[in-house]
Image (cartoon, rainbow, N blue to C red):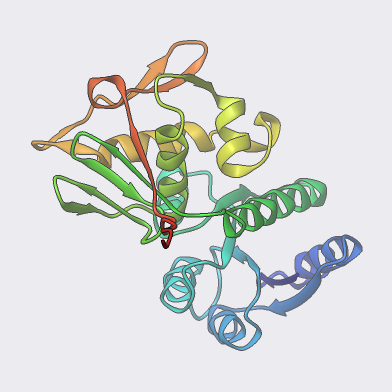
Length: 245
């Protein structure tokens, strides 16, 4: 698989290039925002390791432009910023994950592997599914979520999180189970990803202007998704076979 590493710290790029190539990845480098956008269009990488603080174009701008070109390429944000609002902004713009500096190269490699495993599993799904509960609908085929026929704009990660909840209604999911099911790795690597994304997802799933009470916190355990009347309908969109007589 091909990875694009973008950072203006050339020593860090050199270090990451070495660490990732040791794992068998093909690595392309870029040192500013404009070069990163050009490299995505030219190289078509499977994953982009993207710093937020870049010259010429910020990582946020680069991420927006990447998503206009390719909705499916995976993006791992690098950030020296600890501000939760910056992290949330990156996730909202479509980043799959983030890691704050300083970090260990082994941790970054673990996150890259997890993101790519999840991407491969998603591409290998046998057939898209539509999940329905009340007026909340999630369509895997179109990657759309609606409430009362009104589109809900979710980031790719928020979409995956909601799909995981709707695929497991009425069951308490621990943080570890959610991290494994949505991100593909354990709590030691995941940090506050679940908490941040659940909080953002709750704010977006509204009903009559108020947050829906569909994702409930179970103190000390995890989260529980309750559908309308306690259930979620699952519709397989695979074309049905018809016989001939």
